[in-house]
Length: 328
Ligand SMILES: [Zn+2]
Image 1 (cartoon, rainbow, N blue to C red):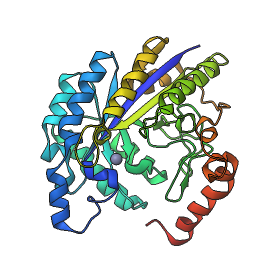
Image 2 (tube, rainbow, N blue to C red):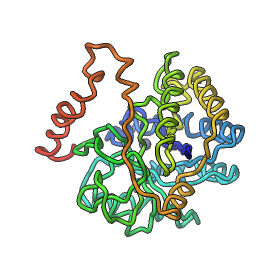
Image 3 (tube, rainbow, N blue to C red):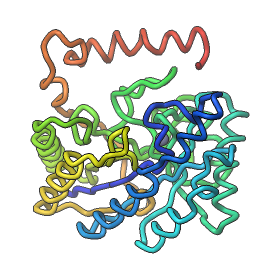
Image 4 (tube, rainbow, N blue to C red):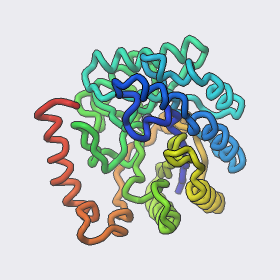
C-alpha cells in the first residue's frame, strides 16, 4: 500500500481566470490586466512559503506564450528565481485553443525555447484548460519533455473526453491520448475530480469532501501494489478574489487539507520525481473503481449529480459540437 501526493500550481497571468485577456483583441484591456497580477506577484511567494512549511515537493507550471506580453519570464522573471530559491520544480504551462499540430508546435516550442535559453530545462508540461491532444504529445516528444499532467479524469475540453483514461500514470496511444499506448511521454493525469480533492468555493463542506476523497484513495491503495496518487492542483490566482483582495477561505481550506495529510502516510513528490520513479519501477497502469463523491453533494435536479448521464450523454453532446465544427 503506497500513497503518493502530487502537488502543483498553474502559475499564470491572473486574467486567465476569466479565460480572456490572453485571447482578447482589446489592447487596453490586455494592458490593464497585465498590470494587475496579485496571483503571480504575491500568490507565488505565499504558496512557496506554505509548501515549505508543510514539507511539500511541488511543481510550478509557469505560463509562457509566444507573445512576450504573456511570458512570465519576460514580465516577472522573479517568479522563476523564487521557485528555484525554494528548490521547487519548474515546468511549462501553455494556453491555446487551436488543436492542430502546427499551432501547437509553434506555441509550445516558443515557451520551451524561452525557458531553455534562460537555463531552465523543463521535463514536464501542463496544457492550459487541460486541453491536451495527440498533437501535444507529438510536440512534447520532439522537444524531449518526458511528463505531461494535462488530462483531468471525468472532464471534457474542446473535442476531448477524458472519461475513460486510467487512474494512474500511463503512456498514451499516439492516435488517441485517452487510451494506453506506446508513446514515450508519460501522462500523469489528475484523477481526483469526482472525489472533490480541490478547492473551488467558499463552502464548508469542501474540506470534508477532500478528506473523504483521500480516504477513498487510501482504501483503493490497500488493494493494489502500485502507488495511488492523491493529486492536488491549484492556480496562483486562486489565493485572491477577482478584485485583488485575499481569499481567506482558500487559505483556511488549504491549511486544513495539508494538516490532514500530515497525519497520513503519504509521500510528497514533484511531477518529475513521481514520473521517473514510476518508470524506474516499471509499474503498470490501472483503473480504479472510485465513488462519485462530488455528484452526491449536488441536488437531485442538477444534471451534474448524475454521473452516468454526464459521462455518456452530456459529454458526448458537448464534444460533438467541436467534432463537427472544429475547435473554437
Ligand atoms: Zn492555465
